[in-house]
Image (tube, rainbow, N blue to C red; front, top):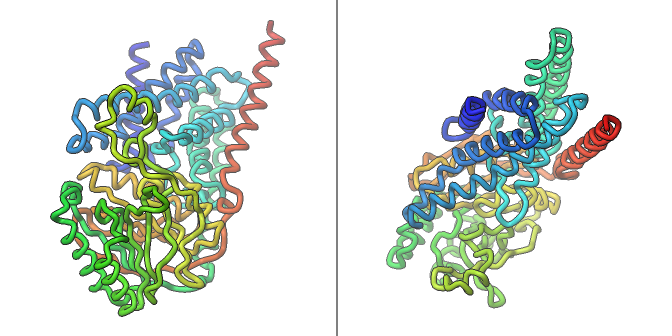
Length: 495
């Protein structure tokens, strides 16, 4: 057992290298297979549960090591305990996955049960106030096209389902006799052929679709360290930098500034708004920017802006707030035990999904920072008529860690899912322009101050995912429900 535990931990570390900063993406198609074999051969469900917890904790700890970069803002001991505790919490979902795989009878094909269990637990792991979709295996194949293009059919969870199906088929080949190996190989080739053909059809349709309009965008990367943004003396310079970057791109139809240009109510800065209005009218450019705002005695993390005539646009108020960063879960309890003085003010949660309407054809579906990890926000915006998707972010918190690369990797799937161009404007990077196939057509080097200027097309056609959402989760529930009923039937008959 100690050797098996070591093997499971090593598998988890290798699996994490399929993500940034290593990006060895083909590994994810086979590295889960040995884990499935270990789990199926475990002597008990309890032991399989333990292997799953070990795998998940190590895997998530490796993927979340970027949290240690927050030591400049949080005591090192506190962030270390948070990193370990949070990784262990996320590991429980992997434990549940492996327990389900082991509990289901051998007569249920592993290539049917394992993908359903894995995908369903990925989905459940993303829910709730501390839900986390990071590490979903579908994100690790974004460069292995056309497989990720199937996200246009069923979203990130459908891609994860396909990835685990491949791993489960490999595991099935490993444990069967020669006749079984040949049958499984044949099934694998047939399924892979169908997936590849479907992906190519999606690519062909996307490339051949006729756009409604063409828009030139300018994505600004101010490159202001987080400590500078905390310094009120520097706020005037930071705002000036963005005004200069805007003024130097007069050909853009849309200028996008990143999240929280300064941590103050910038939309109430009359001098700044006057200059932005003047630039918008002078250059005939719509301009949007990220800022805290105060509405109805509440504070929001928001996107505000003006159209090319200087008319104020309806703001976007962030829906998915980051716990402990934008609000404090259990505030009343923390206050009761005497920690009131360390708590910052909470942002309030927005509830809108309507796109920002810039013109008759330009409707912006927008999210702020880590909100882009949760696919439903931009899906609902696209259902509401969004023709262009925008992510604004401030990754300065994470300095030179892999967090910004991981954020961009996950954001790219939103373009595929909804068949839209995606603009990512990040303060310190990665700023990028993503096409509807999820490919970054242009990017800015991190930690430089610059504007990325490029052309995008607007589209009103909707994908199957936009229309029907995470239908694969219902399929997974159905598979596990029938498999569980069958397992109970076999157990009752055996007794």
